[in-house]
Image 1 (cartoon, rainbow, N blue to C red):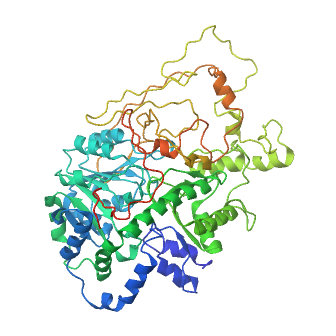
Image 2 (image 1 turned 180 degrees about the horizontal axis):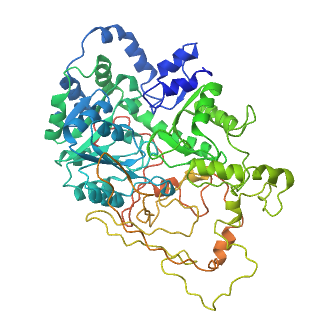
Length: 616
């Protein structure tokens, strides 16, 4: 496999080769440990697999029932009207028909996201307006900015994935309902809830009930992901009967296979096991995020899916890490360089049981920091992590110590590099980018032979934050009916706006919702949003640049005391918010009630898409 691993990835139309292809290449018929495909590892249960194995001959010999029969059984389980549901051979089949039947000219989608939402409409000649999610904001989606983007572009269809793939970002139900009301004049709004069963930020996060009452809303749900059966290929959509009927009328009569039928009809007997499997995945997600956060330089983003989005340390190339993890450790990870809006510096890692996570951690430690065949990233010095947000720039900074002179890093290490400050406790020269900050994260004035004269009372320039971390509000108008963004503080130099990356393991303790949640309303999309196949992005007036002060304002005593040393790589900034605190908060006064932290789901209640309990 070692000699052929690159060709395996290049030779597939998907982002990764299939497990069957990897098993064939491995020679022994067994595949690697799968951290790539987001699947529920605890369901079906071993007893359910034994039942399917015992009936395998009949399942694959005979025709299945019609899709209407299978759909009726699923709707009976989920308490949904069959007229509002259409089942497909996987959610990808439904996305294809949504594009063909309901998307006329243009579609807006935040990126990065599931690739079929960008690729499918482009393949049929539609204009795709891509709204970039900012790494500086933790890839959180600001619905107010997204609505403004849609209005400016004149887009007719809007897509939102909740939770989003690959970052796991979550939007609360009330915000989505407000967005649907504000965008009621669009041709279509699609809410992709393929991973929502794994979320625990709200007790009833789905909007399927609201979708059935609106003429232009479709909710997409996956069954393979949460039931742990990707190979069966089944999913469904929920909409008002008119929209659902249009899609249902175009599907083949036997588009659902006998395995799908067998699973759907056996689910009513295994509701308790299914609920327990979801509970275990959520617990594993917290444990896995905590362990990954301990790796130096690795950033873990809060997720409500059954996967975690991570940024590799400076200098690490995702394809190299992916290939070495597979060939040296037989672990398959999802490198996200081919996702629009992402780069090769990001991985999506599926939540798996602890025994597999220990193997993943061992492999990452060897590949990223080990000495066998060379480490994938340079030796990590405490407190010197630097990220520009662009992998190519990071590699240059890492190789040259930020000075742009090849070989300077090696000279500094060998000769001491006079004039370069050393990282505390390491003896390693700081990169120039870090040296300019004085180790505290705030830019220091450039050294001059003679300091310029300072005015006695220099007024602070308008629009710049004051030393006491005064909240900065941007006055962009918000669409009617949407929650107004709250203030965003710039007092914390490592803040990610609303979704703080997960750092130290203590972030996963007992968390309380914040009183005034942060907002992403102050963030502007990086560069011009991407658009393919249609008119160019409407020009926007550049923001006025405030004059920079001749001297940085003095720091308050509390801020000076808090910055006694640099924040280690992979650890949230001091005073930052935890994942649970930022989860689902979009505007002041609209906080969510925290989900129960303990306790098994009711064994007699089947978790369903409509958010309604049913005795099963």
